[in-house]
Image 1 (cartoon, chains in turn purple, cyan):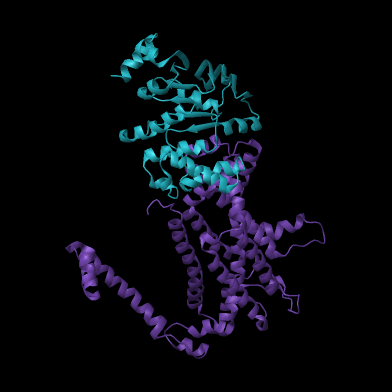
Image 2 (image 1 turned 45 degrees about the vertical axis):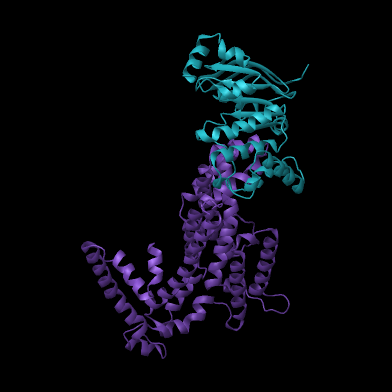
Length: 359
Length: 245
């Protein structure tokens, strides 16, 4: 009934009805609404003034210092460096095309109906292609050494491979922890508790300082790879606990029905238990992933120039001192776009896998 | 003379200090229909769950179709292929459609070709009158429908023995009959059945033998007529008077 009435009115009247019902229904509600609106205006007003009306979009650092608004020139000036770090200026088409390829492939892979073996093969090919593009050295593409990689591509790389490997490793750890094999169970518990018990920074330090000491002389691992391994190790422990939560939520009857039908351990886990358990833990999985995406910024402490590090470096330019608010807002926005996309995607997946329960 | 298909000798089981099953002995011949009843906590569910090794017994011997149940995984696999089980709470796989619930085990355990498995599954769904829901998910069915699917799922493995663990206790009263009807049909076809239930009408209609368990022991076993009209033991009499009002 109510919907029909809503539909029959003009759009503006709809808004009016909605506002009356939700914002001004009682005197108390009206008072709260007014206070909130006043607060919003008093905060947002100056911010918009600073960001839009008083901002400097053209000019020099000096112009920026004289103006009272945001220095958008700084972002424009430092955009390349913040996004791509020390990657050679002349070769920027390579990280750009890599990222476009990568992000469009992510977009393409997001449909659950495309999740099959062929997709895995395609991803493998894509990763090789991107590696070739970024690293160079073949087919006349100039080589670019790993320590020149930086900015957003580096952040995406560390997060992507971090998630890609830590998810399956986490699943195996969780299964081991829930399993009946005492030795494997103890190993899994020890690993998870040890890794969770230390901060990621100390793992990164270990990877960059201690790990080389154990290697025979002459063998070196690129620092990027060592950091990546440390991140995977760290994320795996957290993923394991997330997955374990899902396993514990599965009714004992599901195990029994699978057993009674004669399914063996792996068939039971892969066909029955994991699909249901992983679905239950989509929200915490994405929560952990978002946390990890941001945590990759900790690699600054071992001097890898990820997105946050390039931003800090850009701020140290003597010509452009003092525009940190703009810079941090800008990277904040980049991080937010990625994290928010993950969060939206998580909602979608949950709906997708609701097994027709609500249809 | 028909073959003995289940042989249970002096089976004992403990949960910690609690002695659940005490020297249980039972022979079941092929095609025999047995109803097991008894007060709650008498060990009847535990007993039939021992028969496909969902529960482990600590002492004694269980042979199913000539195979002794022990730690040997291969033997266990063979036994479970031959023994179907229907649970009180259905335990359907909620993330799979009805049809997928049925075909999963034949395809993965018995390596039946997909099309063949599907065809047989549809036949079974037809039989339990649920084929029109084949592509729905368990969450969209009523309790009675779910239990009929669960029965069809077990039958999909072409078992020699069917175990029923209180198949109607979790159902709304109006749905009990549709499930019992399927079970009666199954009994008529000569399936070996062991059924833990309090549905005495069902017991009278199809059972060859009623077993009464109390405190982990088989107290009395008799033909249904005799058991219901002329129980020998005090405990059986008391139990019957309680459930028959």
